[in-house]
Amino acid sequence: MQKIEKLEQYKELIQGMKQRYGRGVSNIYFMSEEIGRYIAQGRLYVEEFEEVCVFYVDEGVYYNTVIYAAEHAMAPIAVRDKKCVFRYVYREKDTRSTAEKFSRLLSANGFHKEASSVEVRLAVEDSVKNAIKVEKWVKKMEEQGFTCVCAGESQFREIEEMICASGVIKDYQMAYRTPEEKRALEKGSYLCILDKEGEMCAASFCALVNGITTGGALVVKEEYKMRGLVPMFTYYRARWLMEHHAVYSQGWIETDNMPSIRLHKSLGYEFRDRYADEWILDARQ
Image (cartoon, rainbow, N blue to C red; front, side, top):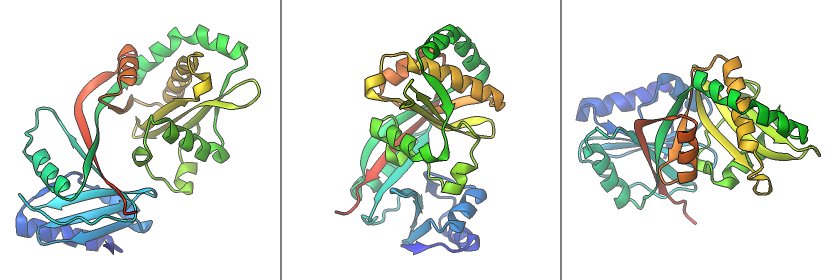
């Protein structure tokens, strides 16, 4: 596995593959901006085979694995020091041929299919309408001593750990950001609800990219569930989105997570024709 040091090095690899094998197939097509960021942070690696390039983006606790391959190509993908995660996004109407090619390649190399997700989206103006409906309830919660606040930098890690421990988002579904990148996020990307003793009892994360949310997650500690904190977050997150001129609240839900599916349907989210399969290659022991 070789580290890619320059953008030109990456471009030469892709151009060489195209010249030899045509456009090829890939699970992700990077934007130059993304590649530049990965290279600048020293997080992009590649392993070359005759008809396949396997790119690895070091995401801290796992490698985001990107395959660029010729038609019907096979290659040995080695087990690494961290688990490798392969994510393939598709539409229901798309032909299944590409998915089947990846399935053969991944299965032959010891990957297992971990989850399938569907994309959901709600216009922020509709989110605000939902928030207005629960405004009276929020006031009652505040009278009981609950407050929703923008989390400070010292609380970021605690919130991330709460989210991962809950299973709402797995560790490999949390986007990697440097401490500097986290500080540069809009204030309120990390929200938390405190009880009257000042203890954190629920938390939410949501980043904004070009007016659309990404990486959204909400978690309530076990002992505070069924206390009405989710509507409180619905209210304050909607206000935050409106204040930041967001257009859509958008995210992914695992297709077997029925409580989340029911919640998002009740809130009016559109279930879009975009799905994602996630495959995992476990790390060597």
